[in-house]
Every structure is written in C-alpha cells, then in structure tokens.
Image (cartoon, rainbow, N blue to C red):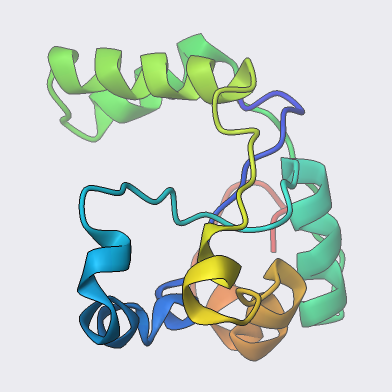
Length: 140
C-alpha cells in the first residue's frame, strides 16, 4: 500500500504566525479558505531517501499490501469500520489524492514552509527504532 504518488504536508512549526497575520488584516482573509500544505510533493521513496540522509543510516520504503494492512490493524483491535476507512484513505493517497501543492503558506506568512529534509534533519533522533524489537533483521 502507498504507491508512488506524492504527498504534500506542512509541519505546524511552519504555520506559526498565521493567527497574527489573520488578525492584522482580517478583511483580507474574510470568507477565504486556505489549503495549508507544502510547496513540494514527495513519494514514500523520497521520504526514505531523506530519512537516510538525516539518520545517516539506510532507510528503505517497503509498501504493504492492503490485505496485510487490514490483518495487522484488525490484529491491533481496530474495528472494521475504522479499518475500512483507513484502507480507503490509503488507496486514495496511493492513487494521487494527496499529490498537490499550494503557495498558501508563503502567501499568508511571507516565507516558505519548512522543507521535509530540514524537518527530518532537525528531528532525526525521533525516527529511530530505539529499543523496538522486530522479527525482521533488515528493519532498523
């Protein structure tokens, strides 16, 4: 699951100041809707490549088949309706549903949102398996 379609997101730290901007000129924003996502869409393979650079350790994206995902989620005790919803979202993202970008953050704040590579470098320690044990010796 996952596919190679890109996804775009924005870390909440990139959005600091949006309320202040809105309060400074409320009429400019009245009735408007902003899609606050990043300026770059990335695939899971690209995220793995960026994580490899941030952690200085090889990270590989391995897609998970729908049936495996469903079995695993049900094994964790998630209800059928939630598993169905998560599977539908995963399929939508795999088909490119999240592969879009906007300039809304830059337009609102006058600066670009933080790039994925910068975010991963700044948080590399949070992306390790630490004491997690796994039956798969290639993980970690």
